[in-house]
Length: 252
Ligand code: ADP
Image 1 (cartoon, rainbow, N blue to C red):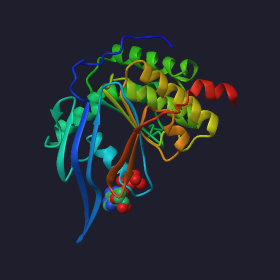
Image 2 (tube, helix red, strand yellow):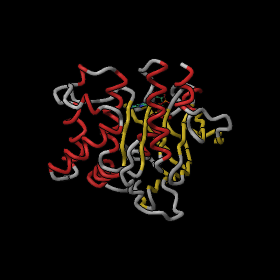
Image 3 (tube, helix red, strand yellow):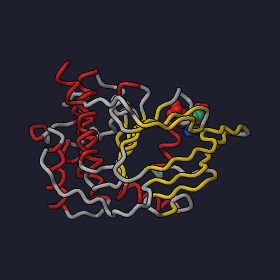
Image 4 (spheres, rainbow, N blue to C red):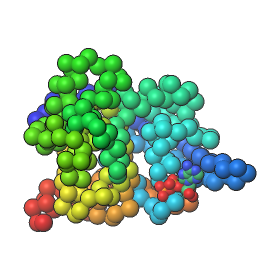
């Protein structure tokens, strides 16, 4: 892959993610649903972490907290040394847009926009001038292997191609953190493996990635597996039998 300078923003020993005793209660009428019940996680810059756990164990809620999409009921969350758990909604939106790249299971592309326009959109919000938006979007679409699909609309793309557009969009503001919730959940084995090859390339470039998956073979592409149960972290272990996506692809 071509290498554009990846800005890692700072190289100190401060953890990129330092979440301590996070709780999130959802309140529906008079019912309190404790979705995350005192979860702590530290992630250093450049790590590639999988989050696993049964359905309903709080993984998505925890990712929402890490992504500043929601605020914890209690606990503290420092992102890149900044305590974000107490910021107001506008400040959180700013951090989401400039510092975090999201990749979801359902791609979340805007149907009336081409691949190129979808990738350019977050840069519009970040105030990047048009010429720069265009060149960055083209660069990242090339990087994910879609040089010849830039002017296609989402319905004209396969699931794997749409996920590549979503990854290019996540990268375009040069985020310090990439968060991904079940990125291969809607893809067949080969296409899922291709997406994991892309994530492994990003990791090799020095990106920090936290990825939720319920598939053990997907988690084995990461460096570390954090397991959730009942809203808490119950295990946190390095991956000893790591899979290399390109080696797996060669066998398919
Ligand atoms: P997972 O991602 O591990 O499947 P979730 O974080 O989605 O788990 O859910 C954890 C718990 O919180 C579940 O009991 C779920 O029903 C509840 N929950 C999740 N989102 C909401 C919400 N927006 N409102 C109310 N309850 C929710």
